[in-house]
Length: 378
Image (cartoon, rainbow, N blue to C red; front, side):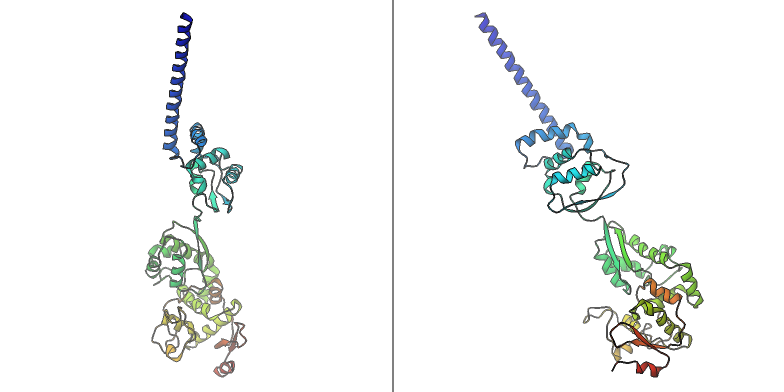
């Protein structure tokens, strides 16, 4: 009887120990789950029972690794995620590249949080200074950190503004045009001119990579700095030798930009305009009329072509068929070759040029008006 009582007591004690242990395990698990949910977010509803038990324990045990940069001394590097690439392979490559300490721990976090189903293929720029948690968040958005902005030679400022607004930058056309037509004093600190009524002509053509968060002022200064970086002191001296201010040189370059098709002909075209300016002859350049006419709805363009007699008679200070000398401001944004042609023109006796009839883009040059008429196409 005593033995039976002792066995019953022993069994009771074992049961109590088991219950206490289970209670402790449950309490501990609930604590771990709560802490993990606080630090890593709620678990995905798609986790299996095994994953729900194991993954919080893994994350809790190694939580420090997920919130500290693995290689803080490493610089930014490109990292790509291929279309259809498995999450496991992405994690392995991240570890091999030195971005994270443990591929399996990183994979567990992605699956736990459900982010494994949200990774986007694309090109990224990652850094060893980023924590694994920051890297995981970064891989959810393949939007490039920089926007590509293109400015084509010969575009007027409205066309540049449209390109900026469509590039992905957080800059509207209206913002950009406001700065272009009412330049801030600090803009002229990066330009070789002390003032100008507009920034037309100084938005240097090219392809730019600009941070998406850049403000309109920063974007504008980027283009203006490129102008100054490309226009050398030798070119500035060349403008002065021709008797032109920088503003006047840019005005003439903007005309040459729209008249020329081939860069090699730009110094010749510059010589024609210099000869006409010297002798008090109107420039009679079609692009100046096109600029005066502005946007043409029926053409869907800022540059109407061909022009008719009524167009050539339009009253405007930009219409060089009607007024003498240079227009009051540049009409577009010329490239380096056009600016160089103004600084270093050819020396010729020509006063006229017109497009060749072979569709090559070349021009025929003439000294007299009679020769000019003979160069016309039949």
